Image 1 (cartoon, rainbow, N blue to C red):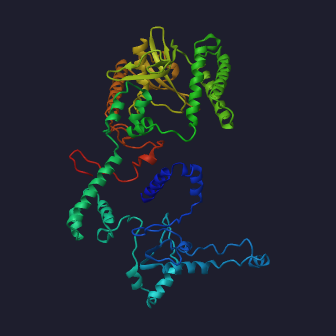
Image 2: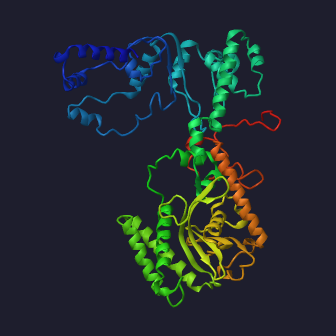
Length: 555
């Protein structure tokens, strides 16, 4: 602040000179030529950190010498072969190599001469992995100066009297040994929120005004900790108004919130920009979806979907479309990108071959990338689900002649989600899209399937299908668990509507918590997913959490 004030005053004086004032480029040259001491200004209440070379012949009230382990001080690099031997250095007229052991001892003695009032010599007896380390032999020289070694093999009383040790588990000082009010506050906090802080302070003889200050600090620290561990509910009126003003939501947005509201808020609303390239699976998925959309709209050979007779035409056109999409996205120059395009070609060819062998049961592609909601190319408005809207794009809808429809969602994955795991794995998009197809396009919903496209030995779709259409859709080799009666399908759609409404209500109220996983009672509840990339800012599992039970007691 003093420096800023001096700069402001100097600039004011320069401005008063008018035309006589030096020009900015001249000032820049003058400033660039100035030289300042790195360590300057008042030293009262400050700690200086420096290596021993910088502190020789200086004096300080208190000195702490750290890293006094054997191998660090003194170093253990003296035994290495020198680049030039002493004889070669003498032949070349170079100074002889320094005796590093003598130099380290000299530096240590210089450190011993620095303090006026106190000296602390610190060393570690184990490394970060817990392996034992030896202390510097220079410490033994200090002990020898203080008192002769004991005659028996017992502990040295002098060493015990001046040594303070701390194990790795003790991160704060005991209450009775806390050297300052800050350390005392940390020691109190380490006892947890259920501790009798006033009683603990009384036991160590602290009373009066310090007690009130310490209790106030603990209260504020716990409030800040609670706010950092549970960032919601949000209270900023502008933020709440912004969240409440969102008219429609995408299916994946609802699913992200259901996985973890904090992860959704950090990734979707705060919108951090990636420094790394887009992950390969996302790029491949985009290529596959775009190629499939164009291919099924073109219908090579005249068939609405691949048949054995038209399969060669579908495959050839599929390869051409993949190449076109790759070129449009400016991919393919790097070997990894060429390999990615080739992989998509192979996955597409295999999918088309399986489609050609599948019995359709009268269901044929009807809608492709059917958009509804906010997109400029949307065919229909957002789906009104009672106070909130849904927008999105359905990959594919197959329809029979009688109006029954099946929603198909492509997934570039080896495994997809079965019906009984929809809630456990936060899946909402597929059943909600089935509602949109029924409402906006007037179809009768009889099923919704996730279709895996990844290279696995078994690529059977998973999802939910009404038993009334199971026979016609048997070509998909359905799992028994994914087939339900018509009433069961209606219940699933209604449950999905209710789950979506509950999620939207939480979004709009700013109810943001670190709450990974599904509701209590389902597998994975309150467990962070292994693939989450927000651990570095969330820190949810890195320290103990104190929660309140139903009666208000903390545990």
